[in-house]
Length: 222
Image (cartoon, rainbow, N blue to C red):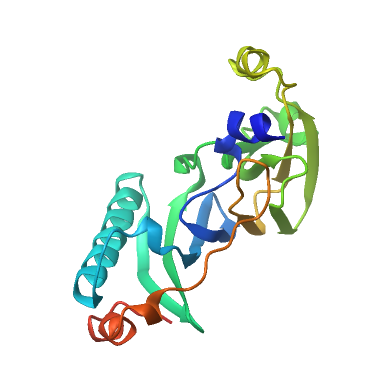
């Protein structure tokens, strides 16, 4: 599955953390989101010593706030949380569904029931979550929803890339909230190119004073 994962990495959130977690509440076309990057890896944070590390972490937090705001979100809170020895980055925000733009992962949709089509109504904005079939990503929907599974062969460019790497285009799963109102919980573990879940040991205790300095700088949030 190595080539397939590399081929559509955009469909599985991977980065410098053990996992990415979304808690999403959707109502009246507005998504309220808590995005968590759990157990940040030290090799994704280029720093030495508590003072430099807290500066790098704060800069990353501010950049995430800036990116969210520029995308049309209203940021409610951002910062860090300590879970035992693990350090998580957390941002909470609201955003109109149509402005969500997580590449390949969170997909804005419009749901039209047969009655909407007959009456010429536009339908309601809703949300779908896409991920690779067979991946460790999990999606839980509280509210009416459906799961659709299909090949990516119809996605522009995918067949050509699949042919180049000598593998079949993988299947994807789309979990869809069908009434535009409800809650979605997504857990996307970071995986290697073979699809195996990755984990790195916590590191903040190796930087003496870092946990205290994060708290002193007011970067810890509930």
